[in-house]
Length: 123
Image 1 (cartoon, helix red, strand yellow):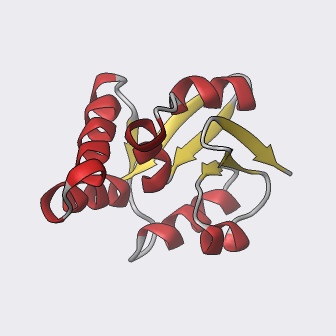
Image 2 (cartoon, rainbow, N blue to C red; image 1 turned 90 degrees about the vertical axis):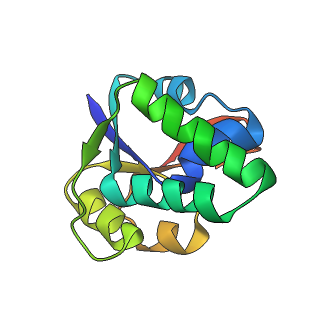
């Protein structure tokens, strides 16, 4: 079973692109358990407070879905979210992100969103 860790932008893809990230991960990574780090929750709450329009709505929807689906929240392993995700990727977690700079730092395999409608695994 793969352990998939969602980055903030992956959680927000639900509201921004209408992509069911949870189903897409199941299709791309076969059998998997989905997690987020505490920093992702913090970032989503910050976006809800500071942003307007579609970003605020996407963050609100993302947080609601994380709660509804009872996604496990892991502790941060570093001061910033990206560094925590990199640390978890070295421990065998597959990170789902659209962040170009973060993808360069991750240990393969990792997952990304393509064409705003599907999740693919990069090996």
